Length: 110
Image 1 (cartoon, rainbow, N blue to C red):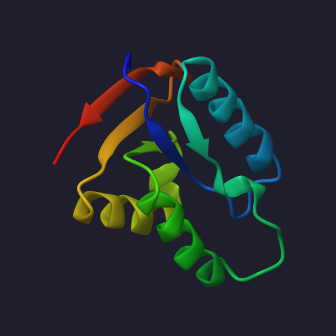
Image 2 (cartoon, rainbow, N blue to C red):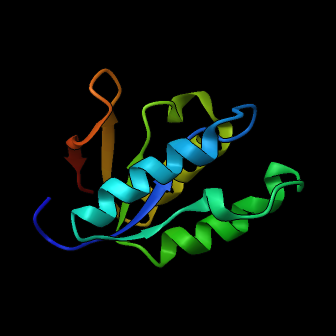
Image 3 (tube, rainbow, N blue to C red):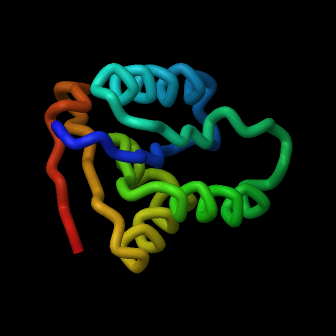
């Protein structure tokens, strides 16, 4: 990942007490690599997840890349973000779960 990208982070939030820390860790790694990051974990808590989706889609629209965290498949919202990002032609990167390294990603283009 040498090119500076605008990256949206997608992953499981609902039901995880430490989701803010997980997202912040990935955000920090991406920023250190020189990327601009949209982190949905900064949104206020308390709304139903469906209320967040239009906001998240707008955040994805502002980015050229979506970083799918290792737990994304366990989240209905993150799976919806994946489908949306693919339809919008975004570059997708996938966190390698066993290494937890953001540099170890598979990049998939449309």
